[in-house]
Amino acid sequence: MGNQNSCCCYRSPSPIRKDIVKLEDYLPEGEVSSNNIQHISEREPDDGDIDPSQDPIAGTIFMERSKASIENGMTRKRSQHQIAENKMKKSSSCSTIYLDDSTVSQPNLKNTVKCVALAIYYHIKNRTSERRLDIFDEKMHPLSKDGVSDDYDRYNPEHKQIYKFVRTLFNAAQLTAECAIITLVYLERLLICAELDIAPSNWKRIVLGAILLASKVWDDQAVWNVDYCQILKDITVEDMNELERQFLEMLQFNINVPSSVYAKYYFDLRTLAEANDLAFPSEPLSKERAQKLEAMSRVMEDKIAAEVVKNGLKKWSSLDNVNSGAGVRRSVAILS
Image (cartoon, rainbow, N blue to C red; front, side):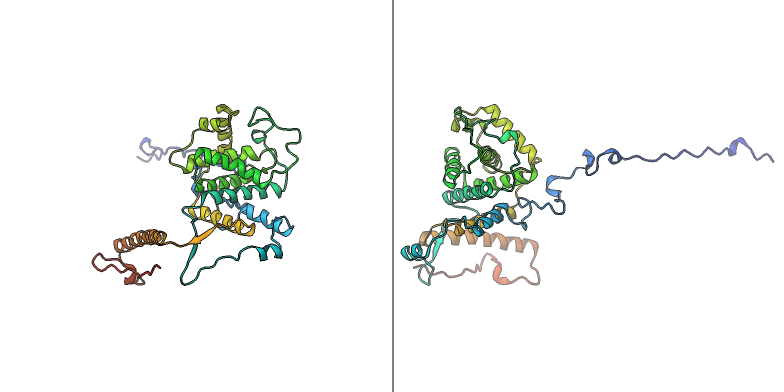
């Protein structure tokens, strides 16, 4: 009984504590484990590396390069004599309202393609370096059997040449104006992610890859790669597939375009058009179009009112903004 070393009081030895080693300790600096990878929409750009194709606040690259062209006298400015000869700009009045047929949700196709081609022109004209990749080089991957000339990478293409190339693809594939804006977003995203520049030697294949990707992401009925082979007769399906694959890999498969970024690019393109005498043509507001605009605004107003009623009225809500079935409040419009 007095023995302290009883078998019933045996104390097990304390377990040896091992240090827990994390997988991240063996990974290179800046990399994380595949189990902790964030979703594309949750990724944040590094400080000092702002991507205008993802950040709605950051300025677009083509606007910065077009401003440089304006300062250097590269834009096509009209002289005072030409302004005097041309008709004065039409302005709205109490009896007549002038509007163009382009909105952020339904842009004008012809003018949008022209503006996108002009943005690409400024990208090439005011590029900051000559960084290139083989997949986009037109000499290594020609778009026609004739190939390219020896000085294919020396002379910058004109705006008309770029517009003709883009317009041919859009008309043949029956793409929309929204797809043209998404094309420009993907193009600038590629220049940042892949750290390359668009130049005379690669602009066609970069634009083709951006159009190919934008048409599949945006349009409900996407154009297949084989369809582009019928537009560009001498290119193969294998080449188109490889172009698409590498384009996606360089974007890190990030094809998301927020609505705020889309709107930013749209309005920047309008600003670029006005600065380069490519303003969208304005026409008097007709009675039929006014009725369409009023119908569209009513649909949105009813949608907002339904959400307000569903979620409950707030203290700051106004009864004028609520359509409660029996007493629907409408504004009176006089159309001449």
